Length: 226
Image 1 (cartoon, helix red, strand yellow):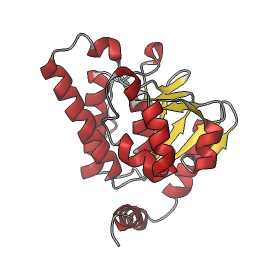
Image 2 (image 1 turned 180 degrees about the horizontal axis):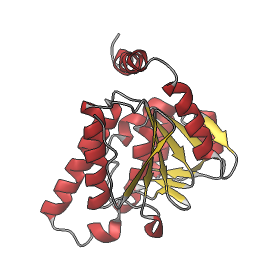
Image 3 (image 1 turned 60 degrees about the vertical axis):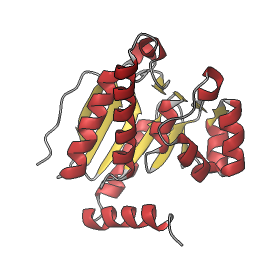
Image 4 (image 1 turned 30 degrees about the vertical axis):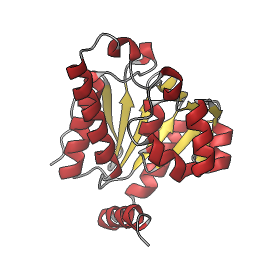
């Protein structure tokens, strides 16, 4: 049976009967991802993967004025190679677990959504965004590259040529552009994105859970075959 876990860098809240709201909780650093957040995310995803129980849909958002600015570079610059390798391995496994999660994930992007933050949103099943949200995969600007499937998931969302332009130039883009390109499902008025995402999650939660899980799996794998 799924029990509500308690973390510091990740808040979890049951909303209604079947919806789980997950909030990245490091607002003082724009929810930048560190080892603690990575371990919490991996633990939660593992629990949901093996026994989702009452959880039929998850909404992921960020505390404060950002969804997530990506990896915490200040922490990264002080880490040993070993510690960074472990942290990145956890992030890779978490991305795979979210893509293969039996329950749908909705990203409710409430502000800045850069680098690893955007990769986290892209690994959700779909995205709702505040009209003022900003997006970017900025890694090429600092001598690295998107490392948690951004180079796969962004092209699938916006097309190969546009994704190449966005990734190789590391240029930010607006929520309106993301919506017009098909990356974002819905634009929300300021302050309403979580509410609207939770309403969508409730609609999913009202459907038969086994049907939803199998339909999600069929869509995900069917797009990878002829």
